[in-house]
Image 1: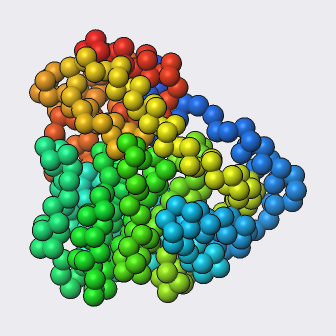
Image 2: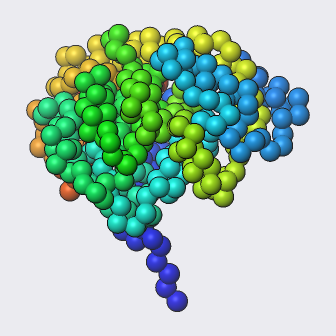
Length: 381
């Protein structure tokens, strides 16, 4: 007997491939997006304290109330707008679970979902699992991955159920501008389109840019889910805890699916994070923290043969290797790992038809020592 899944053509992700190759060849791993430094010991102690204080049973379906309240305060502090902690905020098992549940809640067979390529690799399979149709919009490396909003207007029709945006953007390190968000707000006005705004890198934005959250635009906020991640923010990607925010009417529908997916999230971690976030500096200091790492990384490769536009957000930097070789980016990334001892992520795997722009993505969420060893390799290519 042969059984075929609903995703018969999906193979191993590029993150697993490149991290596996890095481990096999003892390469420096700048491929997968995780820090090689520890979380703040204070946060770890607070989570341990929560366990020892009895926070070891079910949390409410929407999450620990203290955590939801501190999230609401954070939105007010950063954006001058907020969500009601009782009805508009839900804690999730990482951002990906939030994204999975949002899409599963609303996307029905034959609904169309617009995504921007290169795109985080979970979006398309989740849409397809639910019978939806992905409408990809290919952004161009030659135009620094800017969105062509006229192209978006042409793609919208009565079947368009959702638009997924990601800012700051993984894998390119670009950010949506104020004008971009105004365009999105205007395009979706007076429609039934839901916007899924993946904002997991909201606290990693550089050069005095301001993160343009969907919640800043009143009409857009009424139709949007904002998705965020504590894992990315607090350097603990293995904890798998995030949250999403949306107007009451949308969140009510989200919870109908969420309750049969995970129901609730690890309670002591929620309590520990709630206590930790009482001090806003723990997220307010992150832009400077990561910009220092970005600037170090770029300063060390300024005389290399790689070309780049400095990342505006995330902890990823895209490097153009077109003056070094005309190899397919997947092949070059693998050779760089095996022969030179440095792992990265090729962007073609996130593009329409595996479009190859001769660029690789490197993660700079690393110690100074790791970055110096990695850039020594890049400067000798």
